[in-house]
Image (cartoon, rainbow, N blue to C red; front, side, top):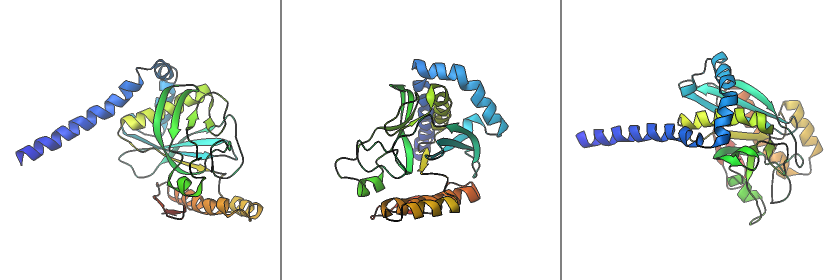
Length: 248
């Protein structure tokens, strides 16, 4: 029993060190230090107005291609419901509405993703990697030619990413670093074709009635869109063998 207690205690110590160490590792990079110098006070004020403790911050990211908008939602780890922290304008679009299915198609992906890497020395200032292709993309995309390297990043150029400008990516990067440093290993990102109100989805379904690859995905995204809007609770997503999703 004593040995088991020691192992559990060491596990908590290692977790605390590892989490705190993430931010310290990021701060070794000049652009991250500059981002904190320029934007830390802004971020802390945002969190204060939402009564979110910096040390408990967790975030959820939503992107809307048609509106060229990224939303950052946040909450305390001790809370269930998210609240909107801030909306950011996407600087430039690439491709058309609909999912990314192959390398070089210039498409911004659509679907259920998460942040899978932090790049503090990106070609595009700072960047957050999105785990495209996800399980659905690998099923429905062109095998062997799916592409990758999709990011939320700085600058104002894109061939399939979400460019936010160097100024805005600093805030998004800091929020993501803080959440990851607090132990949030999975930062969910949902990319929608548009804000999927009933009216907008009906419009899209009519326009793309002969393209079930798009409309089926949008049906799944609509479920997540409605669930979150109604409850401010993060939904769960299962990936089916058909490439569709079980969202609940």
